Picture (cartoon, rainbow, N blue to C red):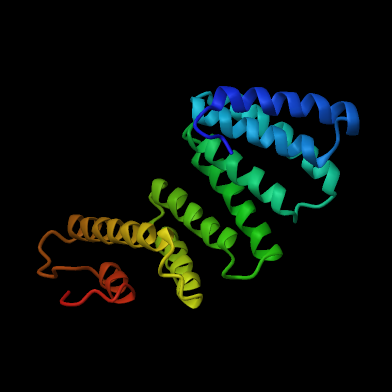
Length: 203
């Protein structure tokens, strides 16, 4: 969609917004989608405040147009907004919106739909950054289970999830040995649980 040229794409979205506003008025799903895309462009350019502003506009319009939270476009906007404010180190608010996006997609799509899997991965990331390691593990394992149900081992997400879980295992182990400096255990229970789920032998 962006083709590596955000400035050119921005001009096209702004022009589309101008045309759609004349044709449909300010409250139309196409306007919400355009603001959502503009927000993503601003994130790519590093303009976090402008991105947040676009996502807020997109969300306000989408909620008015669809008259319900449970729509994939609202989920996409919520997810993008969550990551935009994550860039501002607002972990609590970020988690709230990424959780909202996941909840919407879980209601709209099947449990193993890519949007749901991506939502679980995204929530896992936010939990990990907030040092909520148990919640991060739960979300990553849930995402991995959904992919395995579909025999989707070719998806790039599988490798991402496994790498994230290995990092979690290291963090769990580090935390355990800080609390138990005299322990002779090589791996803590949480790390062993992750290794079992990933079918890593010899731990």
